[in-house]
Length: 181
Image (cartoon, rainbow, N blue to C red; front, side, top):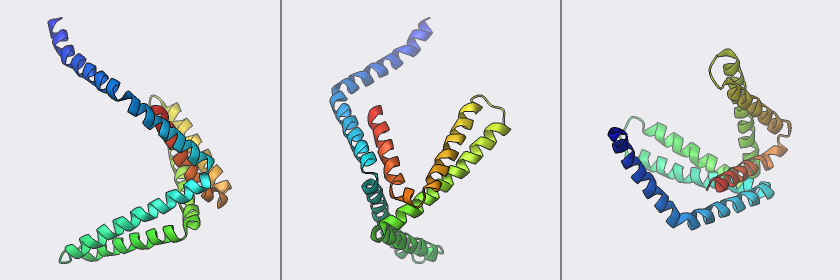
């Protein structure tokens, strides 16, 4: 009994300290959650604009990565991997520039790859769930069916789905994150 008390006292103190910390900042956490839910609802409501914003943001991030990659290659130009680093940097730069200058076709391409990922991931989950005996195989099977159907739905409406799907997914993610906060 003394051993159990000795083990639980530090845990109780830690949880109590965490609870006090959360109580001090609960207003900020609530505000963060509300802002995320609002931003997510806007992204869902304006999925086309959110999709284009997502693609342009990705393009900007790729240009930043390109600068870092090319800078690293130039900095270590005596290294054997110089040309590989330089080539990857140029690839990032071209991809980033194309995403920024042509966001709608870039969104369509990204959405097509996303649909393929959902299809393949769904099939693998279904096959694994049916082929292996493990607890909660039904959840994996259900996840596989859902992924497969989502991939088919996106593919069925492609290329039009490329203009709304990414923004919709970002919006849904923001809403769920906000609710969790």
